Length: 377
Image 1 (tube, rainbow, N blue to C red):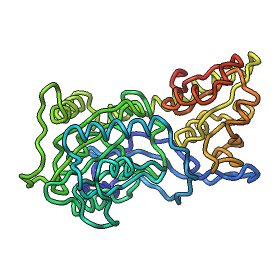
Image 2 (cartoon, rainbow, N blue to C red; image 1 turned 120 degrees about the horizontal axis):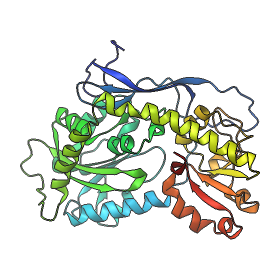
Image 3 (cartoon, helix red, strand yellow; image 1 turned 30 degrees about the vertical axis):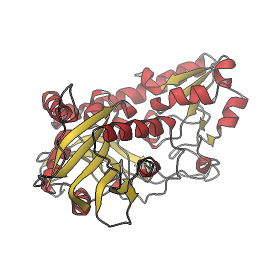
Image 4 (cartoon, helix red, strand yellow; image 1 turned 135 degrees about the horizontal axis):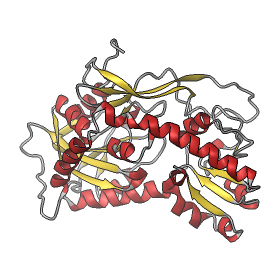
């Protein structure tokens, strides 16, 4: 990969730390009556030796994913995050706010306007800029952070929320790697990116969402009017230092550590296939829940077909009548799931379990069980 250039620092040194071979596009859900085979593309994670940014190596796919239903866990985390940031004094009434949201859905603007902030038009300067899982979808990471820096007003705050690479590595979440997601941030790598755009982090908050999510507050590096957060009781400023220290100790920017995801991928795929085969041999029925992008490479790598997993239920109307990419597994509605509950419902997104247990009590009432996909490994 001598000719590859880092999406953030433009460095050319680095290596592939996770290679899932040829996989179907994670965001293309074909109609159930489309026979396939579906096109496949390389799916690889590359780690920059200069800035430590983990990134999607190449992506020849075209985004087509139908909009998913916003999980309750994501909604609750947004409320919690806005409350914490407001408590730190970073959301003053009348402040101008801009948002870079995820194309998969979810917005903080209603929460922020309810606190007296005023949304601005695209491209306009803002006192508060929110990026909730948005920047990872930019192929050119350097240009994306530069754009946010340019729009940030003097004395303003950029709030970047990201699924922590440290959590991904620690919990073996290799299937966070997917087409369309160009960057996987550690606080260390993101700090380097911010510095390159004339920004610096000065506060952070941690959340349990997706096994480990960070909200980082940054300001212009030369801005003496930027807010200063106290660290009494382990405040947001201390959290930044703690995250950086933990990542340095854990080696989250080193190939040997991040490369452990390759072993996890093989182990989890084998565990899934073995468990489903054992359930079938025992005469126990299994259906899936959540036709999420992260389930695509897992099912394909495990060689799971409709014989082992007859269907996957999903709350998104946009995915009805479709099938999982690379397999003949249909996507069904929750109504179809609850009408004839299987012995076990395998949930591909663990954050959804509290939500689905509450939403579909018929499952457990029928004697069926919800099972967390992470319990298989």
